[in-house]
Length: 350
Image (cartoon, rainbow, N blue to C red):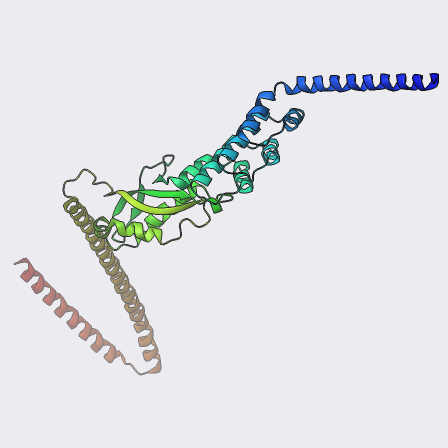
């Protein structure tokens, strides 16, 4: 009996020690959880499903418990129950913006857009503003082409008749959620629309066709699949302004262009006339060169005459009397030429 009483006293001591330990641990837990008690009560009242233990352990994982609880309450109250507390913590620890993603999920759910939590987190971690993307998907926005950061405020294009046209377009786009990850940005859309407009203007026969039907330019631009590979869906391309370069203040653009065209034609014809004159001068110089060349050939041929006469004397084919008769004939011919030349000269003087 004494031994049994000692054993009971020992067990009683251990029980009291255990009770004290439990009380101490409980007090420590309550002390730690005191800061999160209001969040836990808020979670319970809204049926967000975030336990007190989870709130305490978030402190040790360096997670902002208030951010997680508020996001979870917003999602649950919006009818999005598939997102768990662990999902919110994982995105927070990955460096994501949990409030932005939760608000985007709520906006997409209200607008009946197909956006799940994983895709929303991927968009946010990629650096895209997911709230702006959802807002643009619901409410399309207008992009100026060329953009505000461009060196020129208008597109410069040339029609087939050589007239420069300045145009400005406005593109209405909305976000394509399916292509938001990896899709090109607004700069790509602006560049593609500008290229399509310049190409469409360049394919027109005259500037008058462009000024008469600017909507045809916009329609041609839309046929090029401008939204391929981008994060947007192009709803419309509208020509906001189009004018002829250099005559923006002219009252009669056609008359001024005709005057400029006439002046250009005049310079072109003058250039062609100068070209023909230069060709004529070159041809005359070439003919004079040919005359001098022929004269040289005559001189060379005349130089062969004395040699032939000497050969004729040596061979006996030419006698001395024949030579004198030939010289007399040459003298008579020279005299007649001189007399005829003097008479023609006097007639020219008279």
